[in-house]
Image (tube, rainbow over all chains, first blue to last red; front, side, top):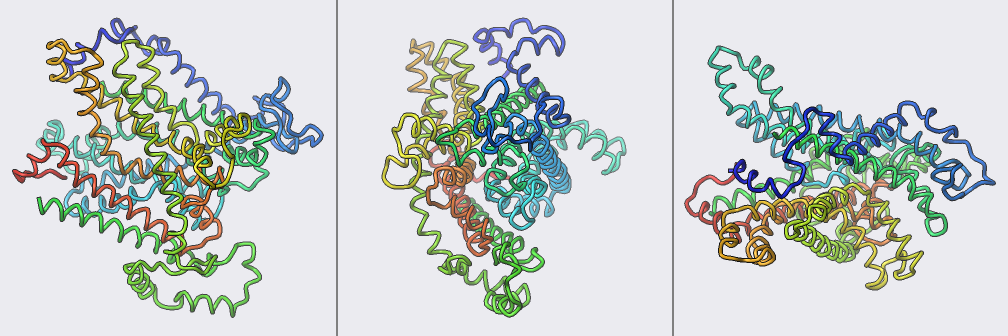
Length: 291
Length: 319
């Protein structure tokens, strides 16, 4: 059904007629996707080697030069203590991105295993797991993350764990759905027919073929997790103040927003750009792998 | 039909009970000494052992965990979640105090978000220009990507500090509601718009639309008469997600604009480790989520005749 409709819809979309060969050729046709990749790679560079991107240190302040507006010298301006906000954003990338990575790994790792057990186990195991998943889905993830952080204690690492825990349920649900879909496929039945044991079928066929959608979700989750980590940092549950962390940078500038708006807007815009870019990348990943 | 109803209602009840149990385990059992959590971390060292014992006794922490749980569950069933550690008032009364303020904000934001969603979907479907459609399809993902605290600060900066149209902080009068409402509506509108754009596009390519084309209907006529009605229903399926976004967004929005409400109270309760209050809020949110999903599950068949037919014949509908 859809194939036929796609043909009908095709002329309405320009550029679809002759897709250029190769991955790079396709990339060149999507300037925003290229831009998104550049932004993400640069920010990863910030996290890995901040010294290459700025000559200022994150704590070097000159209180005489406090609240300078953005200029050639200070791209993002300076904060109350005259610290360069661009440098603080660059160094903050390490804190925020490490936390994001940890959060996604926790959610992906545990969620995938839980979903696999539910889908492959079936029966009462499946029912029990999915009811628990329902409960986690009923509590908005920011709220759940706040509760978990309050139990674990305030730190960026705990924020990462909390954000990860609060996203386990969505990963488990997607993985279970995929596993159930894969298990009805002929090649799985064939593998059983050839005398494959449950474990062999699970490892050789079910897991590899179920992972694609979960990886797409993980790509999307990166953007969501950056937002969640920064939101919790903004609310004050993360690293203590002198440290640079994106949410905290915005929160620090917020007190002076009436008079010195750039102090919170510039780091905030950098954060928004990163999230938009990761969303753009994950969308294109999903589109490519659906075909 | 009755079985469907009972199943759905049972699941909703289970979610609420489990949310209570989960928060009990997280907040009362897991911490090594829950008494620690009851005091401000900064003042913890000044608390004498006598006071600690007294508090432990007052909250029943010296009793076996199972007894504590049953006692709390029994009280919770009657709507009693204990009293707030900070104010000493009952949790239920504390929540009810600020609930109206958040409800007004959330309802206003929801209406605005639906409006934004429909405008984007209508624009994407009815335009013939590719760039308008591309823009309309890109907007929702932008809306969910901008952190709520940033959009709040931007809106505050532009409309309050620069233009002076609206007050910056506080919760007096309708004018102070406008900026928080806009801020909260933006992230909430994202998923709604995404879903509507998709379902508008699907319906636009369906058979009955081709029939309407053949009968000589105009593009605008088809979008308004045929597509709009059929494509709007799926928006109900993400009511739960929308509710979650409203709650999460209100935590940040109320903090940025210094408005009183459930969101800001949650943040304060967690900052001061006001455990009974946190539990009360989480259970209330989970219960609202369960009720909303239950209502959607129950009214969806009423709105969609195809589903009604499936239910009447008794074939299995849910997995």
